Length: 269
Image (tube, rainbow, N blue to C red; front, top):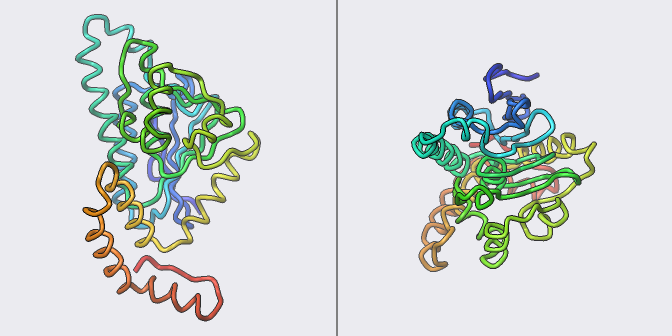
């Protein structure tokens, strides 16, 4: 059974009884290109996931031929001299949407087909916790091609994912990466045959949703908040988190399941 949380507009959101929220980018006629209304809808959908206690995993997909082709260049070109003001607004919405994904307690899985380009497509890929791509998927930063710089936090997240040298190459020379190349660089979690993308992504998301929600949320928080920090300064936060989790029902259930040699049943308590 599926609960339709947002059933119309440029971003759709469904929640299955297994705890997987499917966030669908829904501007197929524009290759899911980002404009201000789209970005506002994206932020609203992510925040809805923050507020829904039943959300255990968020799966992001794109309707149509492409996951997301980046900014809506037709809208950008039409702004003329007003483009800087428009981009200030658009970038602000993109940044808070990306930040909301990083801060979401539930793990985020992106299932990518077609192109993932620009601050929207490439940025969402870098903001996801896991990325599953179809074999034919393509990845491109795209910013320098139009005389701009990366946004959506990519200047930080991409470096963490692929390393400084590779990030320099990707962002400054702007290659179009195949799924195999993106996987080899460390940008992706796995690559699957085109016809199996949604099934594989859903299966992966559902497997994640069976995990201990509090532990998954805490581990995700530690990893993202540790970006740029030294190991020594993160040790107290790690210790505090481990001690806090050890007092939860899920922790006791996990230990009992190991001792009793059975699958655990986590409740998020």
